Amino acid sequence: MQRKRHTPDFKSKVALEALKGTKTINEIASEMGIHATQITQWKKQAQEGLKGVVMLYQLVLGKREKSVTRLTRFPVESYPQYEA
Image (cartoon, rainbow, N blue to C red; front, side, top):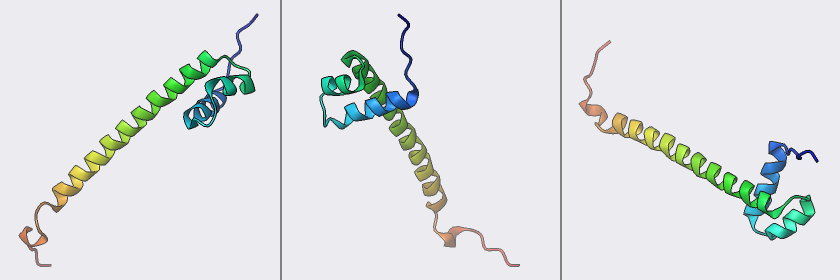
């Protein structure tokens, strides 16, 4: 018997359903026709992926805040005035 290959869309749909927590893993498994262990693995992968996204977002946001702080550290009056 050949292994069944699932698309990333299907995996994310199943993982999202598991993350919602409205149904048990076994309920999702019977509805989708896949093993509960597979759902648990996809759920873990989704959680790890979300952690990475959040960390990346915080990193980007942190850098943006630092650059804004750097730009606004001195009041405008302290910059040299140039006459045109």
